Image (cartoon, rainbow, N blue to C red):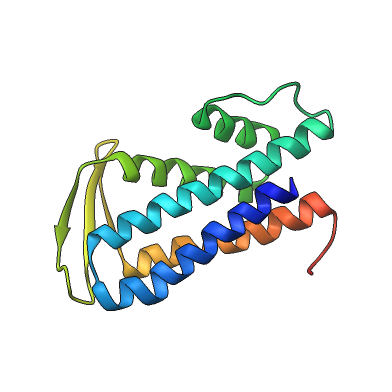
Length: 153
């Protein structure tokens, strides 16, 4: 569990740099896509840690191999709004990562990646990707408190 959370934190450090340095200076959709890939990887490690904890606590019998099934299992095992919100964000990021996208306002403050997901148009810009990053940061803190049964470091 600790190793998975450490890997998630390492991915978030990369997301932090991509968000606050790379994206700030290059302002391209390619950087946004890179951030999304790192966020999906971070969520993957967080999910692994949660499932290991659930298995240890005998809440589940086995851990599935496929990432989508792992996310669904976390959603079903941990009946809490925070988990549901974050798993929905994880599923959205996975879809965004694999979707075709349009680029607009590259090299400007309002650089935007636009994708069609489940019949809806999703726009991702600097402000939205920063909000996603903050949600993941808060989620990893919440998960650490749950796994290590503590409040704050």
